[in-house]
Image (cartoon, rainbow, N blue to C red; front, side, top):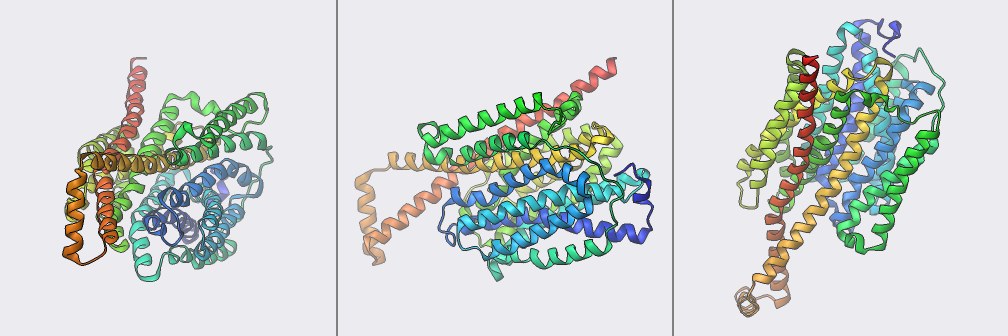
Length: 510
């Protein structure tokens, strides 16, 4: 759409109105991701599930969004950005209502899938539309506006989620999207300009089916692996086989088809390839683990109420929104690569030296301070990573670059969430086993009977309390290993940041 002059031939007031409508949609969609993160630990009781189960409230959303992204480019070129944006907002609002009405884990996961599809449609169209409202000379400003909005949403999410849950119940986290979605849908129909160009293109549904099969099977395997004993379980073996076959059949379909689902010529540029990989590993596999784990830490280890946990998360998340526009300015002045290097250095120092020190005994203020550098690193990461990818994609393939960027974010985020859950349970069980091995059965039995007499309660209650304490401490000491595991994925991603400079040096020599 950027090559259509009339799309930005609008008044300043129109540009402001269109941008507000579009950015509100993107803000709502991204906000919901982190709003839900903070309430997930609280849903094990209401939905009669465990952490493996409620994790799928997040994972199913990400999987659905990732798969829906692959068809978004086709929908936009066929029906126009305006119609697809409004469709995405309407789907998101409708699914939010039914999520709030759900009483079972199965139903909420189903409607979260629809929500994820809605977010995919909103994110790609909003990104494209806001760029179309600004002339080429001012598209840097457009990127700054978009980056500020989508960066501040994750910062506000945990606090808003905690507040709504604390005072109005967890269902309000979903219900709040409904009036916003209705108003946005009406405003979009009334005020957003009509699309000026459409394009007929054929879509490779066969490739979409196979890559969807591979992705879903892989992520279910990762989610259920630890719980079911990995490859000792027939289901895990079947899922592994389905994942391999799905990706192989996708590759075969792309090779023989004239109409590619993904144009891999984009990856001929090493900087684009490195950008996708560092985005996948640092953002998806690593940062998304911390986004998932820190609310769990505050609620399950520090035993904070949901609102207090949200405020604790906000103490670092606000720095994401604050540093995102700064990162955009630094990228313009010094280059995206240097800002990414700075971000990765801060991130690695934080994830290896600061976050693993968090435990039950860490004072809450100290915990909040230790997570601030994590927020700074994330804030410095968003803008330069986006700039790097878009600068290394041809203009006519900008939509596909956005789709791929969001796809690896969602798939990587699903992968990271599954890894975090598996590691959390694995290291908890490992520490629990160590506690059991170190205990003297005679001493423990005497201690429990003494506690029974002192407290004047039944032995069953004393044993249940002691078991709960063991579980808490198992999680507590296991979290250090969980945080370090997430850091390792960030270290792998940082290799691709360094490769950006290897490429740069070679070009300088030439």
